[in-house]
Length: 285
Image 1 (cartoon, rainbow, N blue to C red):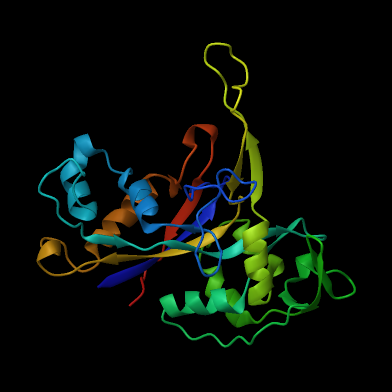
Image 2 (image 1 turned 135 degrees about the vertical axis):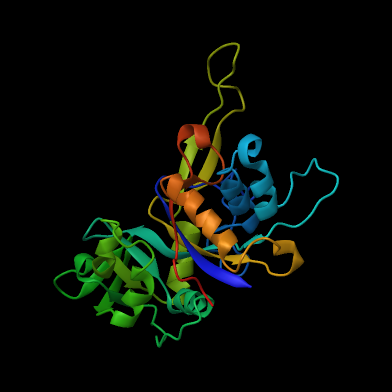
């Protein structure tokens, strides 16, 4: 199977719902069960990418790449396989530099595995951090939310692994100054507890006022969260007519024609879920 890395950066808050309430949160985001980090399921990402094609104009190519519409009786698999998007860099409020992108050794090792690379990074203690200079205070401390960490310098290997995600993006170019590598425990803590919670209301169409039971709390993944997914192209008879990597190339070209922007998740009409997207040129072998 031919593979390619896809990178996503939330340009606006993102809500892909888990479907059931958790505590005071009526509409939480979906998370990995074992890490509690936000994800975009492959099915949700596939639907967002499928919408880049107009089924009336180029429905045949759409069906070959993603499979036919569910209404079609003769269902077949598509050529493309869409992996779930996992969080690799999560934005957290910083006492210096406005915000920091946090990650962890575990998250970096999983990314390196998907990219078929080796990365040497040791475990980080809960009271320590590897941090860029823009978020490091004069006394070599990093303060994120209410937590204070002893700061050490980042390795070039970590920066190089992530820097290629969005080359040319003016904000992403500050990565080496904003990145903070925390312990796996603290990374999971921030991903689980530092999402924004938006209080929403429902308007009664007849009265034009708030519905009696229309108040609810919605959790959103914050803007500037960075995720990655692996996109694959199947081989064999199902991909007949497409050369190796050609289907992935079709998706890449369609994204570029759309300005490398897609909308993922719910509440499109109120501006949620708009993401910058980039697919690696060389792919993952």
